[in-house]
Amino acid sequence: MRHKNILVLGGSGFIGSALVGKLSGQGRRVRVATRRYEDGRHLILLPTVDLVETDINQPGALEALVHGADAVVNLVGVLHGGRGKPYGPGFAQAHVEIPRMLVDAARAAGVRRVLHVSALGVSDADPAGLPSMYLRSKAAGEQVIRGARDIDWTIFRPSLAFGDRDRFTRLFARMAKYLPIIPVARGDAAIQPVWVGDIARAIAKSIDASWANGRCFELAGPEVATLGEVVEASARWSGRPRLVWNLPDDIGRLQATALEFAPGPTLMTRDNFDTLGVPNVASGPMAPELDIEPIAMSGVVPDYLVEDDDVYIPRRAKAGR
Ligand SMILES: NC(=O)c1ccc[n+]([C@@H]2O[C@H](COP(=O)([O-])OP(=O)(O)OC[C@H]3O[C@@H](n4cnc5c(N)ncnc54)[C@H](OP(=O)(O)O)[C@@H]3O)[C@@H](O)[C@H]2O)c1
Image (cartoon, rainbow, N blue to C red; front, side, top):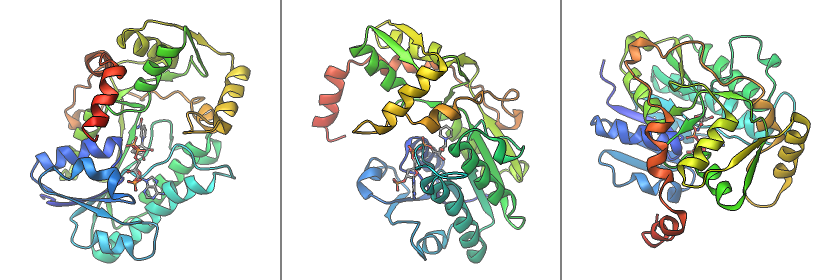
């Protein structure tokens, strides 16, 4: 069955933008919900994309959006959600409440197809055993989706996603600009970064596929590395090779605490530190049905990191991007 009208929640974000571009390229009509029109402005030039400013947390908003959709993709997620047990209020709202409201709204509107983006590191075992609020809330969100027996659901668990506009390789490149040695908390954490374009392909490919119903797909790249190795490579690819100092865990946690309370945009929290305590590695290769040969970081990242920020950022600002 061809699902023509797709509602994308979280479509203004990093992965969402790649997905919306892909879906539009396939000729589907895409409705993207954002709380700030400005944040999704880069999508409005895409043909067949309808950007709607609305707050899906408000009563009735999701019902209105879901109306007329053939399928919904949920990419809503936060990295920082306050503290609490088993998770802070921001995590509860974004990762658990929104899936719950989405299932209810889809059911009421007769929309059967829901694709939900979770995270690698969430396991099918008891969520209470997971070490961070991020992972516990993501696990609870998955349970909400899996419990919707009248919905044809698919869950995706991506590893750390890279690509132009990602929030980590550019950060490491920027750190290399100012620091002779880069101190990294959880530098020995195992990760398997996946290209944002491969995530978008996997989701787009699954929308119409009956083989994807009721399944959970891990999405990871071709290489397992440590976080420290990725920091080192990002610095090198940006043209500023640096030594990386993998902090011992007690100092790393202290660094995470300091960054959590530092003014300005939050770079890291204690919860992010705890999330990295679980290997972010897939249990096997990508599912063959997805038909994706995942791209390595070295095939993509050097191309965009090599642009000098001193030239690139002012140029973007001048172009209003
Ligand atoms: N990026 C990664 O490396 C990675 C790895 C594993 C899993 N994931 C998961 O993949 C999904 C997309 O990640 P991303 O990196 O693309 O995230 P992102 O760039 O931060 O975008 C997040 C999106 O979620 C929406 N959102 C956040 N909180 C919301 C709330 N309370 N109510 C309504 N909308 C809210 C935002 O919409 P507005 O436009 O309204 O602000 C935004 O479009 C998330 O679920 C994330 O947990 C990401």
